[in-house]
Picture (cartoon, one colour):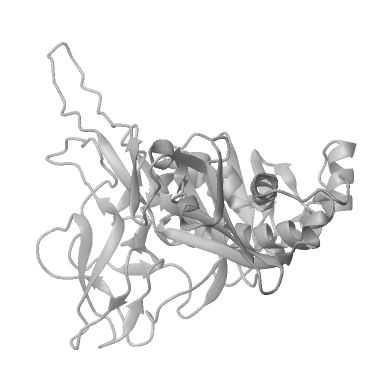
Length: 417
């Protein structure tokens, strides 16, 4: 580009969108929705996308007709996050080549935005109820990740494509552990030179420095938690007793099981309704503080849906309801912090975006660009500062994350990031 040619806002915006896409990690591997109904009139904070979920049916035997209810299920994805980066550049800066301008302004700005988007995405671990590994200890063998894959299979998840997003420590630990594994010379060369795993065990591994850590609640000292006395329990909350008094016993994102393999609440395959032989894992959906007498109500996902009169249910999740005196078994040791690596199918999570309002009528230059392939919509607004001969610019993205199918994801508990 000639040095006397100024960069225009549309050139800058398109380059920013390309740079933003290249810097995303988790966001590249999930379901992405772009709502173009806002493209003409402008989106407002709080816009909602309704994501349709398929129905589930049971199979009836014999010639007699058994009609089942069919209900369309929707999961609302509320677009609430408006993140931006603001900066200023002089008119002299705008005479740079596009590549030089990208290195100085565009790449650092979009890198910051991409990390914020990914960071909000990895926080969705709190909605995932399946977990393997050891809280507080970085997995050092492929087996742990394959166990996560087995969890997804038991949940009826499609096993292609699967993405494993791991912390930097988990990434280098696994690269070192598998450096002698037989594979193509080109793959070994890439693994050695670049220091990342790529595809192994039917999973595409990606390192993400935005992986979150989780610290478990205070659920051991002075506690022997059990299902409270009374009728059998089903649904999305549990009445429990035996906790230490007036204590934050469980945190949002903690995982529990109920009872033992011999006498507990077991998981079923969502398609066949046959027992997997494993205890069903439940994620705690809000912080839980026990009362003065050690009682606590635990909100959980998935809800306990058990057979009724020995008959399978459409959305069955367990072999049986929870019954009085069954033990509550939290995952991991109390007050232990560890990385929450994520294995998931692309439909487990959704990143939704919409156009922000065009503010050209305010006297500023405004340019919006959307990419339906990536699901990203970007707005750049520019205004001239005559006092300092510079242009002030802000780059905005409006988006929201939603866990659509928690069953299509599994956490791999780790240690330090």
